[in-house]
Image (cartoon, rainbow, N blue to C red; front, side):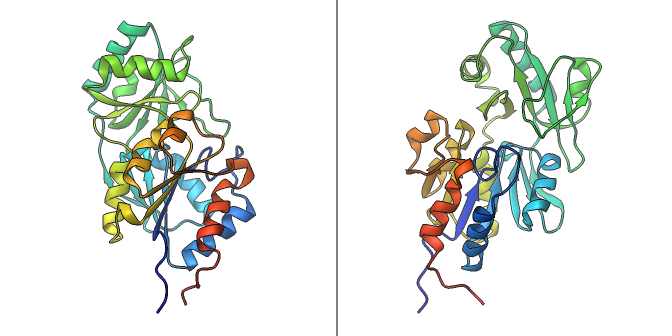
Length: 274
């Protein structure tokens, strides 16, 4: 009888976790993922990026399965090219929440991720994207941010660090929206109660599995709900201290094939399904 896999579902964050800083996937990590999938595990990408910013990466990875996108507000099927589930952020609530945050900390710069496979990242004047490979469209005025359904609002503060801004925002709008810190320049307001774990649970249900069969990898506080939901959470060496505090294991950095090191240990000797 074939031995059961330790984990039949592998959920990986992208930036700072699976991918190197230049958005590339190392040959070693690609081979380790291929081996795990060949042994029978399903791989799900779980990222803060919205679908339009994820599709090119999935294409490069050769990923044809499910992807948790937009911090859990979207579940995308790369095989069919469609969003199978999504939830939008009420635009009136988003505008009110943004106003409350500014009343607490002073002026911020804002951008939004629009819903849909063709949704834009729309930025008000002065907002800058702090990821080297991502970009957005420039709005003429903040009011334009609310013209289309959206999944989240991104905010920058001229002086406060991301952790400080996220903490302040939670204090004043935590009952209106979910506040997430996902990395440099990535404090985000999303639908209340929505996290990566929300869409990951839906994906697992579609695949006929659940949390006790799930292995998760991440590097930032936005991965905490996913770690708490999963049986085993692996933080990268470059991970935020808040995520390391709730992790079951710490591996090497994203630049040093930390994901591959764990997958090789768990699936390296697993028989390949034919």
